Length: 181
Image 1 (cartoon, rainbow, N blue to C red):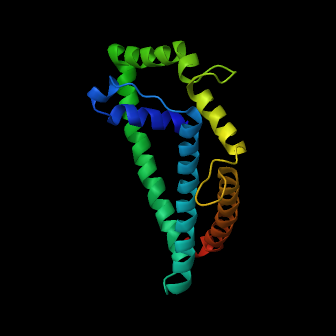
Image 2 (spheres, helix red, strand yellow):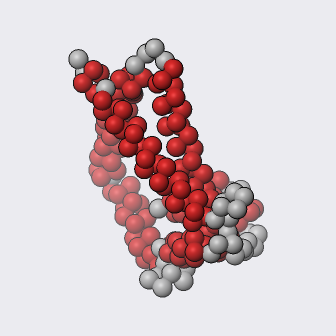
Image 3 (cartoon, rainbow, N blue to C red):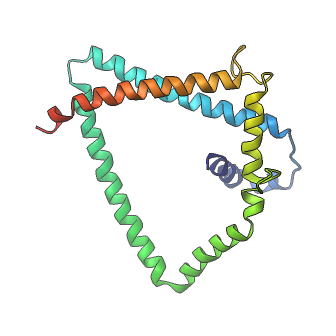
């Protein structure tokens, strides 16, 4: 999914004259860039959790208790957004030409699924990108930063994220009853 979102974002943001240019590169190099991006995004998330943990030790305010207010606010905004989306989808369902456009979009995607998603042998589409990511993870010549291989970096950041998220979640839920008094 992340590869599809990246592809769509690139296509939509490029000026039209760029489309005509020929572009080619090694699929493994593209896969390595995607993996580096994923690893760095996870590192940023881990560092943000570190910041919250450090801030909670230095603040006189009960940060983890107050984070429940942020959770509440996010749920409120999400509920309103769901209502807006429901109203729009209701309008789409009432307008035949709009419903047909949605149907045609899914039909087009479905009829081009082997191009977009790729076949089981991963010879094209998103499956090819993911297969190349698998190949790159096993290839020790691809480095994250310095001498750390992409596989070691990915394993490190996943284990750090797992640990830090468990600690964060535990601290957050320790303050649950105080937040709702």
